[in-house]
Length: 345
Ligand SMILES: [Zn+2]
Image (cartoon, rainbow, N blue to C red; front, side):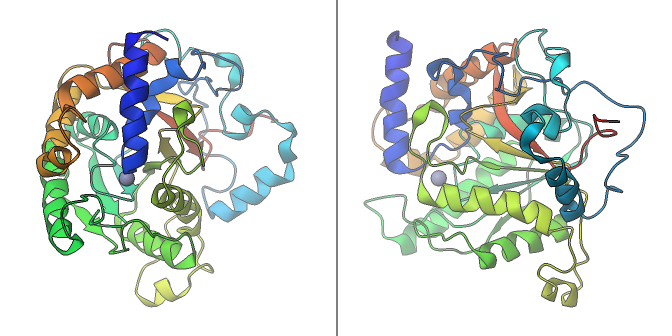
């Protein structure tokens, strides 16, 4: 482990204690011994396309697709279950090696996070790239992060952190930032949280959802934070719930029809990333500005905790090495709607 890695462990240890940094953890692939292209890391091609449009599942109720997938059981390799072809390794990589590039043939994204600044530790760089392409990205946060500053009462921290989140979002072209008003630090996974996220999904009608790792350990073996686990898993589950009118039927009474157009749920900070987004250049610069918007919060972390520029440059540089580009943000992609016919046809 070199000096950079050692520094990384120190800084991530701090992240862990302070329960932030969901997104950026996705870049630490070199510290977890998962070289690009390792079998089982899902380094399959995202570039493969089939001539037919989403031929199975009627592009319909995600629960139906789930049933069909489940019916073929766990014998299919993980990558095939995701609608990808593991034999096409590297074909979709942005840089010709390593992980494939995340598909970008979509228009609307909803990013779901637990706290202000979770998105800004890396994912915001990808958001900047997407909004520059003309895509629409909205943020949904479970809390206002009011428990994140030790020396500031939650009543005062909440509006401060909300303001910083909105300012950071604007730096990457995001105008819509919504809060669910859960209490910071004690967010519980459950039907209530899923329902709230479904409600937002049916209003925003995203084609992709971005959220954070919900495993006990994140990339690098770091112990994940409780709110992150609850929100990330609820976001994944809600992406399927959103398309089923018989789950949370009360939402239909609010005029919210099912939305079954979510193709992918992209998880930041996973132990095994499957795809990357090239953020070299301007997207990284915008992402740095987005994190810099959390000035009061990062100041409260103490001197040297997170200098946005060196930190994000370092972190996205690690992601870039996995994607074959200078700077990248990595995700574990759950593909809810396959891009083509089933691989067994
Ligand atoms: Zn957080």
